[in-house]
Length: 384
Image (cartoon, rainbow, N blue to C red; front, side, top):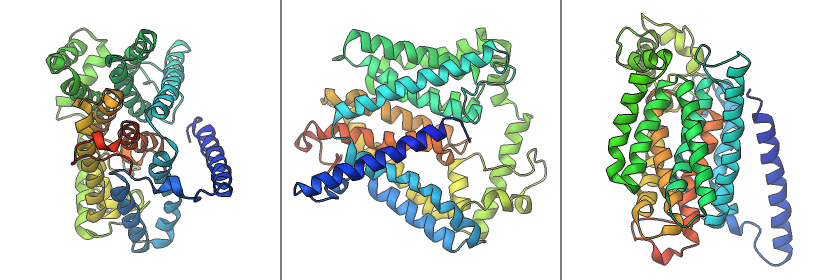
């Protein structure tokens, strides 16, 4: 487990304890104990359905005793109702992103420290003190995108915008040095989404930056980037084998999947010739992994979650609600990036990245609450 997980879990525990005390005092003052939890966003229902279907999958698993043990990890999804209850408006979201800014500085600093003492860099790939380079890169690009979104929106102090932009720039250097192709691809698409919402004329910068990375980047970076188009690349071949095995699992168990925690255990029975990793922890694709593990209905709930978020948040990214523009633009760009990267990596199952994903899915709707629901278009939603 990554060294940052222990303090994160302690912080969540302290937050829960403080919430109980807060609500007990509110109840003593005459307010219903669960009043804040009645606030909902467009993503509440799909996430609830996803969790419910995962429980059903565990009950009908190929080995229920094993899958039911995995359900304890689904408490992470409580971040959606808790964030909607505890974050009141855009100022609370700003504080949260400010804390993310500090987190980004810490992990980026750890990553560069690995290079200085010879434990990382282009030879071994940066991890930022996290469990793997995949987790490090998967956290970096959502942080970078939301900081870039804040740096580009007027109305904040020049110092704050400069700080956000500087940290995002350093983060991009660290992202490149993780040599993680799925993160590069996700970030590129997310950056395009950010430009499309704010400054469409800057879209040309995305292919220009990609070309510059290949043309003048370090040899290891150039070689890694070009390997995305190499059919003989071992990791690319292995992913295809994993996806084929996952599809076979879905065909055998379409409704409830093989059960939480069972994909790795059953993989040797389904793997195809040409594999590289004999027993991978996951199938390197959110869509296939979710369908194989918990079934096609569960995959439908995941896609519903993404569509509900984008449909609800996108109008605020280009609308007149300047107080929520940065939050909406950054959140939409980051969620798009996470989806694209998740076509080649199971980032929805990485708890550090999942926590960021769930908070991002709530941010725009919480920020909207300060503007008043009467300002929102009918097809979009805020906290209600």
